[in-house]
Length: 427
Image (cartoon, rainbow, N blue to C red; front, side):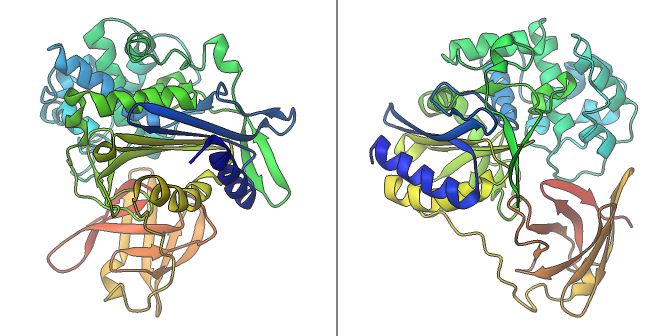
């Protein structure tokens, strides 16, 4: 498949999903191919090129895990060191003395789960060098969560703090050193002047794409609110994982958790995808007005990166990859099933209950055909797709469903996953 072929595919799928601009990179056996289409900003009509930087969002988490793996390889820390050994602000916390650095990367540390901590970006605008330390202090003062698997921004910020204390420099300095070693010299941070030359995110509305301001908070930088990069640099990042056996540890499954549309298992900074044809790993980025995905296929010595500046980028990813991966790598990408399946949920009374963090609450009640889900966002009906997944909004390109997990012997779920965040069921 040539660059012209890829560009034609980008044009087709971006147009269907109203994505203003997109960059695609394909790597196979050390040979990279890049194609671009559209504009970096609808106001200026500046074209997307191979040099256009996009936010990498939560792909930052995979980079943080990679740096920690490098530090472990160098003997400067161990995956099984207690979190408290490397985050001084948490030394008085029992959960941080029990949980390991590995647990942080596996999203299973049992750290406090609060909406105010996970999504408190607006209240943490300070950009001084102590930003991560202050966030760690606030985590230390909070009550830990029950032992459930949950995606978490705060856990990755604490992993960033681990990097700071082990290296003795700021998170950004430590990351910069590792990124340079990987040849990722087009990758930079929100505070750097070069980051200004980047794609603008867009919310896709019925009236067309609307530009949005980038979300930046230094305290949450390791979770995904700082790094911007090019499609070429992300291919170089992927290549490091294909070439270096020391990084294979990151692809070992640490949590057998499957969430519809997102992952089939979680490793250490990577998700695993059970797609027919070959083992696939990677992760995704969801940030204001931008969506990106990276997939690596070690068996094929291959990787694919898609970076978009539209809020419908994940819908484009699903349609594009369903065509692209079978053609390039003979890998079948399963479709996202959103067809209602009456009766698939079994006894719907098993799902009834309250699922909550200290500052976030979701109530679930059974109806004749599905569930009524009540939260701060209002009420929504949910209809069964299978025994643990319920359809909420088929038009939502990011989170059309909710998923339940950790079923007890009686068939009652103990966790509700809203996107990827787990809310434990209250007794």
